[in-house]
Amino acid sequence: MPIAASAFRPVKLEHASRLINHGPTVLVTSAAGARRNVMAAAWSMPVEFTPPRIAVVIDKHTFTRELVLASGAFGISLPGTTLIDLTWAVGGASGRDVDKLARHGLVTVAGPVLGVPLLEAGCAAWLECRLIREPHAEDAYDTCFAEVVAAAADPRVFADGHWSFRDDNVGLQTIHHLGGGHFVHAGAVARANPA
Ligand SMILES: Cc1cc2nc3c(=O)[nH]c(=O)nc-3n(C[C@H](O)[C@H](O)[C@H](O)COP(=O)(O)O)c2cc1C
Image (cartoon, rainbow, N blue to C red; front, side, top):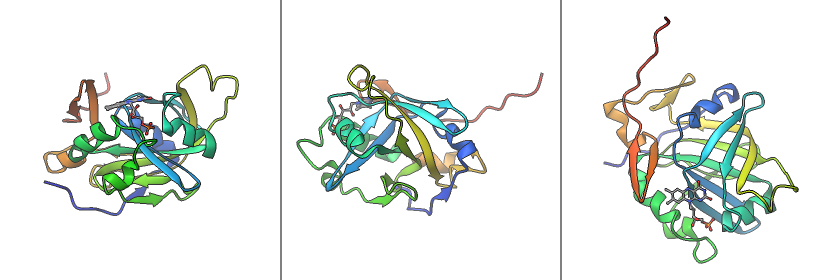
């Protein structure tokens, strides 16, 4: 059952790394001028605490990469389980051939710092990211580094700097790609006790 939209709440930048610490598959959004796009990415990770910086693999040949280099920014949105089909679809077609946001009826909100398009409906959280330019590496690597300049989450699944995965929020639980269109979603939280 689709989960109704809920107002996202800001996430402190000191907690931004926790949004992708557990390796969720994400939707990378981008825009440059009138062009805009969304693609799926299974490979992303935090790499620095302060300021929060992340690495995301964005293939050099994608339309997303072109828009990210043109604009110097991108968004990371974390789809919940209700968006598995969408994630698979936008990861299997290029924005050079079709406006994927329009095709799938995706509504974006503008990031508060850079105006990057971000997804909220069906998503657990988003991170607004400023590309760290590395001209010497742009032709060599698919990995992009970026500083997180703003973040927000649906408080039903992430609040006060912590994830809360429960039976009543499965629709908002992050998805994790196993390969070939198979996903698992985040499950029960197990807490480590001090030794
Ligand atoms: C589940 C899933 C995960 C993916 N992960 C990545 C990734 O981490 N990095 C990447 O460059 N492409 C990844 N892709 C492939 C891109 O999403 C795909 O090349 C997409 O069509 C690019 O779209 P674009 O040309 O509109 O930017 C993934 C695809 C799927 C379905």
